[in-house]
Image (cartoon, rainbow, N blue to C red; front, side, top):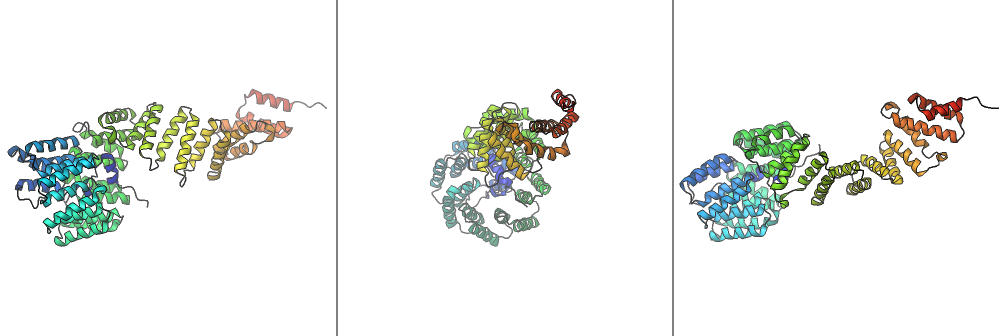
Length: 549
């Protein structure tokens, strides 16, 4: 069975955040920092279980009593980050600075947001500020910096993350969360085996530490060892069947195995444990889009549209689903709102692809082509054959046949190792209407080779031969008309005009060869199909007239 692209990675592409257990199971349990009250521990425990609403409730109560507690603003900002509320995250971090500009965690949060914004220089400056404020002696701050890099899957800073967590481990060798983060850092560096060893080291220290077990399962799934991963997930459920973070990974595994209903059940179980907040519904809708359950995805999106009216991920997925369900007018409204809401640099190639196709479907083909070409430029390292096909269809619709052939030739050059054979037909047809009959004939010959019963290709070849050989006496088109008539016989009603044309050609061909009996034979066939054909009736009248001695 052909494995699918990870839906978690796909959603990351849509939202710029991976929403599976790999990044949402953040190690927020407080350790090595005696200044935090027990209430913050309650909040961070809820965060680790992905129960964000519960965590926010705890933090908001603390803020009400301790408005200067900047560490709480950090945790609230991280929750906003996971809920795709990036402006809110920035606002909360700024509030944290106002509350206490000497709180190191605030600058860890700012570094996280800088990584999200692809501003690595600023991220490093913020992390350096956090380390300076903690005198380079706070293991938790170092671990959170590592976690920020892990959350963004910033492999460019894998070495930096490893350096951070190594220093944290030197300060606190026994903390089990630091061991897990060490495994994360190894994986960022591309050393998955060493990462797995660290996770197992954490499990040896505490066999019931589920976050470490989850990372082991995820590591197996990463290298497509699905039976091993499933075994780990099942072991987790034996310990705690209500451990929320395991269910997204289990859903991913079922998705890869093609068990779509089980994948949906896993995500529904996850929602039942963490709640159906707007962010969770949005995650679920993204998953539904990826498994092509567009109608259900729209139902979820419509439930949260008022709560997240300008949310990038919501607008993106909603416009995609509206296109897929044929609601092109709504899709246009939604995607235009996306384009007006999002900074240009935050748009992805699929945005332009869907926008281009929505424009095509609303009879704005020229604008559609512009956006589709932008999608190709933005994703030039891969081949999305559908984009080339969409552009070709618009050019064909606009009768820009030379442009249509050019875009298809580009597609064939890109897909030379795996050409879709039907492209030869489309390219042949476009060359035919562009007046390049030799190239058209060459492509239709390929269609004949791969699809010997595809009737219309023989008809096109006959027409090409007619254009290339104006003298009917050569009979250049004859074998192709004859083959077309033979192959199309089983579906004669569909091809009636072309079959009649073929008979008329044969009437002319045999008449010019002075083979009158064959001429009469085909003239009678024409008459059967079109009794009122005056030219053919005149020919029959001539052929049936008494011959003078």
